[in-house]
Amino acid sequence: MTRVFLAGDSTVAARPHSMAPMAGWGQALPVFLQGAEVVNAAGAGASSRSFLERGRLAWILQRLAPGDLLLISFGLIDRKPEPGRHTAPFTDFQWYLRQYVHGARDRGAHPVLVTSHDRRSFDAHGNMRHPSGLYPAAVRELAAALTVPLVDLHRWTTDWWRQAGPDGTRRAFLHLEPGEHPNYPEGIEDNTHLRPAGALECARHVADTMRVTGLLPPDHFRNLDVQYLPEDCLQWPDDHTFEQVTAERAVAA
Image (spheres, rainbow, N blue to C red):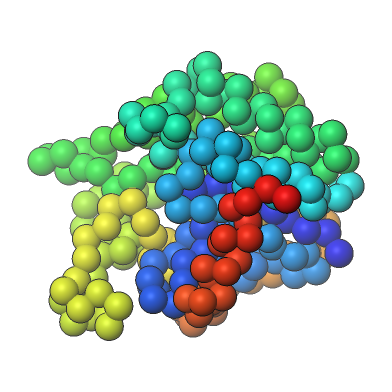
């Protein structure tokens, strides 16, 4: 069976039951795939640099087999100034991404670059800001230079956020009123992380782009035309299992 490995940050990563209904688009991707195993190795707080330096990329590369896919999505954490995580868009950010691309190709697997979705950020007049800066452009440039398939999630979600506006985008992001969910009794307004409605639509776009570009055979896709998908089609692992799997994938053998 073909496997689809995911390398990315918290916008891609699965979340444990205690953090539901927060969800990364990688957590929702299995809803749209069949006959292919999704191995979501993305981690919260990971940049292209820290993911590699903490052994997560090595964990993936040790398991990649010919014909597997490696979806690579970074940028939101790379822009932060923290030592050990920060990279500059057109220099070391691209250098680190090349390690993922070449590592996959050396093993007969197929790398795919995915631009990060932008944060929910609007000015006082309802105009959308672009806090991701130049990182999506750097991914597009690298994809063209290395002839790597590109899923431009950033461009697609930017159009969605802009059309939906400040109020409409609340349904995609983790905005909860006090008492709305037991995991967030005081409510939450998170403009970075998605709730199921946002994660599912982002995953749908990723899967549909994979279908259109022929990254997997047509019979490997499902639910792409289903307009409404319930939140419980996603799975949140119990916290113990989640912590165990996360620890295993953070250390290179």
